[in-house]
Length: 87
Image (cartoon, rainbow, N blue to C red):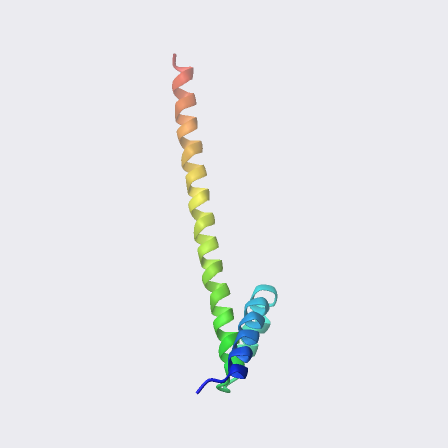
């Protein structure tokens, strides 16, 4: 049965895990992988770290998509410019 304190511990752990992964990724990895205790704070840290990684993956994919769009548009512009020289 979860208590209000368990909930607060989970939220604190979640926020700390998220920020730790954001600013100190190696420390987050080492710390979280070395703790075997099953406590709401620890679970929160694991979930916060995982959430940051999910968001990071989405940002990376979005950046790649934007890069590909820009590259495709540049290629189209080059092709259109070549056609102008032939006229």
